[in-house]
Image (cartoon, rainbow, N blue to C red):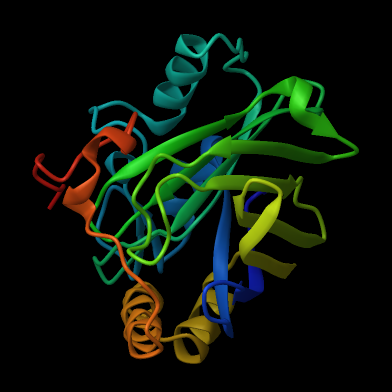
Length: 263
């Protein structure tokens, strides 16, 4: 199996207008989209489109279309002008539903051609409103196994970050170690630095049983920590932005909040 787990440390450091930093431990799934059915058949704790402690649902990702996730991804790449052979391998770094609850601040698709060479990457950024926005890192943006992209955000992720900032993506192709960096920039100045580092571990029922005890209710913990740190930023007097204030700066958003969220 190509699928595995990464036990990670998330590091988050806000630089302006007030300093605020934290570190939290968690684990993430790194799933071969062609292996999802086999994993679902042979594992007790993981299931695809069925109830399980850790359940993966295709309609939790990309557009809310009733299609297999890999098909949706290939269609999206084609619409963006990137040809990707469906016979290639797609690895998804993500969190599944935990006891039915899902929240993913980010999921990242790493696409490899039939020879195993990295081809492109797609970052799927989520917010607490259930919205998503996709950021494509094209083949020409791969440098020494790392995809690099600096792009206007134009997306409401945090009430404490302006919509006019830029995302600076540095996505290293995962191997024995995980190295993901996504920073917020105002021109050439960093305003927020975020890193996700981890080590590769096998995906098995035994490992998931241990991680269920070590990291209980992981997706619920993630959303709770987001609100906890938001409260601390508010207490520090960090200015905040209303989502409704600048709808013109929220562009190419999937599943806008006016649409019902998947149950």
